[in-house]
Picture 1 (cartoon, rainbow, N blue to C red):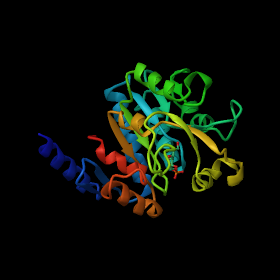
Picture 2: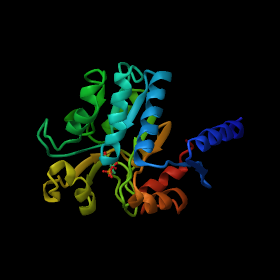
Picture 3: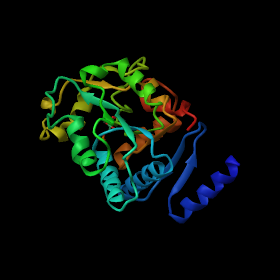
Length: 251
Ligand code: F6R
């Protein structure tokens, strides 16, 4: 059955002139022709998930990659094709030490790009920063909500997912992280392109938090991410490339 649905899926994607390949692990790699088609494919997939399972619990990232995904989701919501009224969301990460409502926070990003434009109920969006949800308490909150049904992640050029930076060992649970200089640079877009203004610390879901999600989708846009995507999906599973741990996930 699995093989049959796999070939059906391949035929569908062939018609869309994209490439679906399966690596030695369970990771499926889908290559689409443009950043917009890739982002809209993810938005469409999330909207379909919301229609099939309105009570879905989603893990959501920020980052430039996700801006066209959230734009697509907002359009689908406006067309009646994405209803968030029964959904629950948990963001992957958030900077620490920012006053509430700071425009450089991930909460502000999510409001700007998604939450202010869809019908997600107040209180259904969670971030790992608020005093009530520190560290592993965040993981317990996710468990109480039924666990993440689907976790969407971006990838840093150094292979990080969430803010799980390359290291000799990775942390399983939600934890506080010191951000690498490169990661602060890539978040400078939220701080008027001034990396020195980007907070030095953040809270992030751990690798275990992400891997416990029932399904994980990683989206990477642009040639600059090609090499790290190759390493993450076909290279060795190593804490030096945190995204490579996704190879151990069955879905
Ligand atoms: C942000 C996050 C990060 C980003 C990654 C890619 O919430 O979890 O892992 O997904 O840094 O960022 P962009 O999309 O800006 O390249």
